[in-house]
Length: 307
Ligand SMILES: [Zn+2]
Ligand SMILES: [Zn+2]
Image (tube, rainbow, N blue to C red; front, side):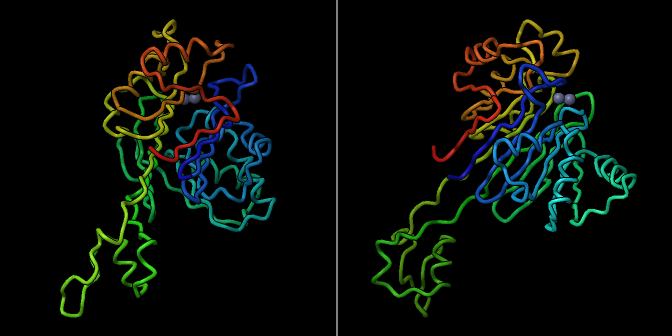
């Protein structure tokens, strides 16, 4: 399995109808990312058996409380549990100052280092470049600087066809070169073993886009085009379209239109307004436009493991 998303919370503004503020646990290969950290996130992590020690990266979309009020509590608990590993904290400008201020006035010196990375508002940039994946910011249109995040695996190496290998004596270096797509050469430079004979195509690379609070912004399609999984806020249904516009939020129909035009694999709807006790209206509205739509319900896991 290559990609897994666990919904911890998915409500906007206020806790309501047993729905908590936004937080998600995203797994890519062996990496665990916490995306947004609304109030109560650490309790939800405990409830859903997420080990704090597995989290090495936290991505915060913006500075509205429903997306980060759980952060200082979570960091304090990590400290109390004796964490020593560095934590990478990505978020909007000012997040570092706020966290440091809270720590200073409680006279807390964390026993682990936080590497703060602040995104540049209103532009899309690669904010984190790992050997196996990249994270690119998605500039949302909200009342305060707000960024979504696109997690994208880099192309994988070719796979060795093990059935053909036993008869051949290949060095580690030769195998590494085969995985890179090269032929194995004789000393005189002629081809000894052809790459296309000994290797299979790489496994597919997966992607997940998290689109946080925003007014409908169709031009972001280019950034998220073709992702396997797209989370998009859908605070309101169409009955509140004007309200969505005024408060810099999106309707379910708009989110589904965005998903359809960006040709994504699956759409997950979230950030629900407390005015909707039942979410059927949100889901139906979205499915009328884009059938592969689902609700971000606490405890739900979404997987992507093949096309
Ligand atoms: Zn929000
Ligand atoms: Zn917001």
